[in-house]
Length: 264
Ligand code: MF3
Ligand code: CO
Ligand code: CO
Image 1 (cartoon, rainbow, N blue to C red):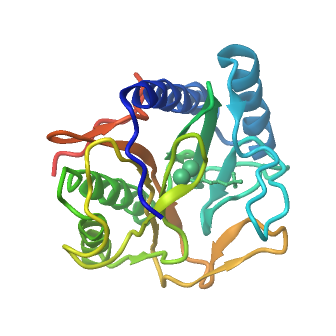
Image 2: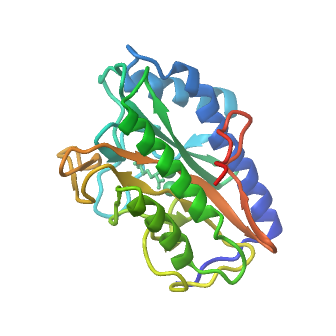
């Protein structure tokens, strides 16, 4: 399938959706504290999205082929959970690292972004994993410009992760996004420079590397959604929705509270 080139009107709506998704992360950040449950974080985000922002939480009842409907409004993935963790009764404790992944629908268009959060003072290793994964996302983003390739993104991410002693999860990838949650292309977080589709202005996709402190292998839990590392090593992920512009890229999932890009 061809990669859609968004019109200016679609791009404008995607910017609105992107900002709204990022603002949910700003909203929830001060609540990510020891003693709080992931279910409480889900409820607070749900109410903020539905009652304050008047947007639709895209994960709720999302059911791609082969999956049962996702039961909550956000994803919360703790420690060795790689992605798609389902909020519930689990209580956050000091030293946990947590990914919160927010996808909203505004005016028919999706915004998708996630950040890592530290509860108390995680280990040096855990904090380094979060930081290197953030750098990986940005190294991927910074390759984006007209006539670069999807492989350039993956190669930049894989190079930084593996040279830091970490591994890249291969089974899940970034994705085109627009009126659909997941569209073409698949944006792999590994690969060869110069390979894959050539980028053109107006393409919009996510970059969302999942990086493991140990081996790359993963498995799915019996809930049908939660992905964990097979070796129980820690995993981290960051995600932005990115537009290819005439002279480079624009991150659409920006907000006042987002962390600064790294100085690399
Ligand atoms: N937000 C995830 C992504 O970045 C997808 C979550 S699907 C869900 O693609 F159903 F688990 F929410
Ligand atoms: Co995504
Ligand atoms: Co996401």
